[in-house]
Image (cartoon, rainbow, N blue to C red):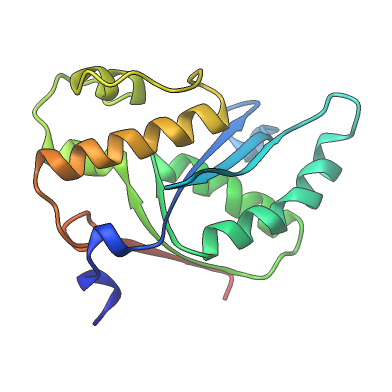
Length: 174
């Protein structure tokens, strides 16, 4: 069985989000929060401490984050944004390359739903009458909300396999 044929219900899914200080890492934006959740709850939740230098704190936490992400299929909302920061920081810190399999709920929602032009996480949750379990616009809150959205999208279109969910692969620096 290939990765793409794997049933969604048995796939090792990890739901991921980053929060940043700005929109572009090449213009000074930095990671300030990182979170990973799975079916059981929060596995990793880090928020920068104003008392410690942000770059040092991120450099200590990034290998742990990458370990969590490589342990399963990464599911996130607008992963292009998060991966831009992740690869920028990994390169800056001279970390080994990344090899991630992922599903982006933003792309999945765009392909499955006919909703107005807003594909923000909060709007998509509202589309399904789903209430976030934690405050949005925090890494942990958005990762949990992404998990909720993902399963609503799966049920909405009766998705069965990782291929149905548009599984992709990110290989960087290998």
